Length: 212
Image (cartoon, rainbow, N blue to C red; front, side, top):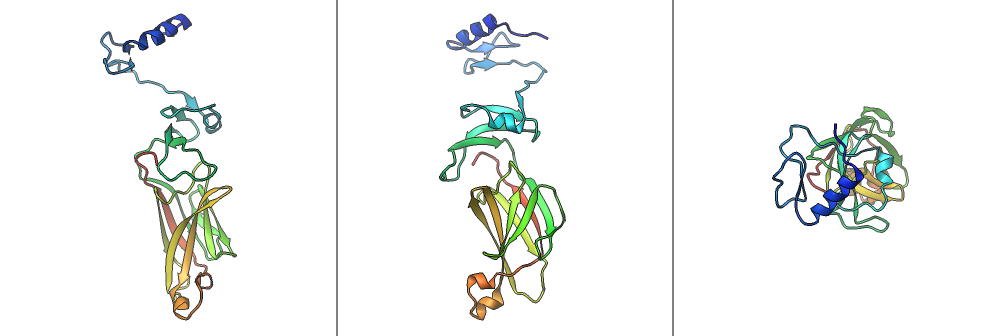
């Protein structure tokens, strides 16, 4: 195993300012700043925990690390969704080709989780008459890059319509799951009064193929 001395590293950095640097090759690609050559040995990126990744001071766009908690590559990139108050225009993003299943479960009509993955929690919001689906950190819900599939298994007498939405709150981004009794709408009930509890199955997929 070979390591670079400080002087050698400084020399390489100085040389990189004017030409490509090659490690494992005497003919580095002229368009590159660093060419590791055709070696059969791979490059090992810095391995950071979730806490260490979040604590990187002043991260720059283009940084790449291996997240040892998530067992996944992460890059610091600009995202596509509109910037909201309090959020940076860039953040650490998993490097994924999607789709990736984030959570699945079966929930009864009182919000009790019957079974499913260990990556979420569900609570019933009695004020707004909808379910709140929270993902285990560091995942949050983004409606523009995730697919939430919900199948109601409640009282069969209800003519139910299912809708989902994105809740942006102080503790992160959650998903809302609403069940509307269409017969109540026809009978003149308002939107809130027409929302009813229901048991349901759900799966949540991450569709990202690039940073958003």
